[in-house]
Image (tube, rainbow, N blue to C red; front, side, top):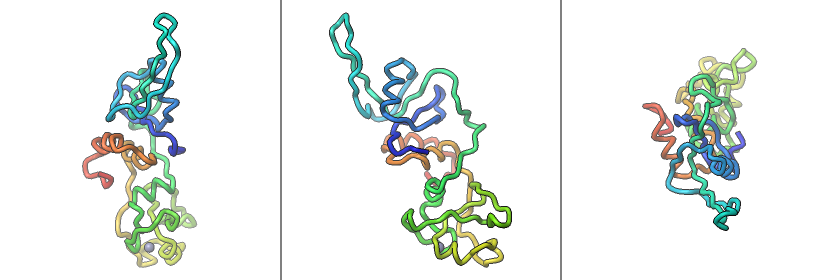
Length: 190
Ligand SMILES: [Zn+2]
C-alpha cells in the first residue's frame, strides 16, 4: 500500500514480486548478503557502509532497483488475491469512467459497485469499476441493466505482476519495463 517512498521491487529468488520496499530496507538486504541477484539499469543509490578494520576502507553498498532475496518466499504467486484499493482501481481502469467513457483526474473519480452494495454487491475487483461523480450519482442504487447504463469496459482481476504495476507510484522506467515484460498476454496494462 504505502508505496510512495518505496522504490525498490523486492522479488523472491525465482523472480516473483513480494513487496515494494524503501532504499534503506534494500540496503540492509544488500549489506547482509541476502540479495541473490539484482536487475535494472544500474544502482538507484550508493550508500556508505561500515569501515573495514583490515583495509582501512569504507565499504559502499550499491542499492539496485530490483532485488531478489535468498530463502523461502513469504508470498506465493497463486495463493494471494490482490487487495482492491481506490488508487489501484482507477489505474486499472485508466482513469476512465465505465459509463460515459471520459477520463478524469483521480480526485474526480469514484469506486462504483456494479451490483450495488445495498443489493449485496461486493467490494471486489469483479464488482467494482471506476466512475465519475455524475454517472455514479445517476446510476444510484441500480444495476447497469436497471439504469440502462451499459458498461463500456468489463472489470477484471489483476494478475500479480499487474497488481505491482498498479500499486507502485513513481516507478522507474527500468522497473516498469521489467514488470511490463511479465504481464499476462492480452493485459490491458501492457
Ligand atoms: Zn461518467
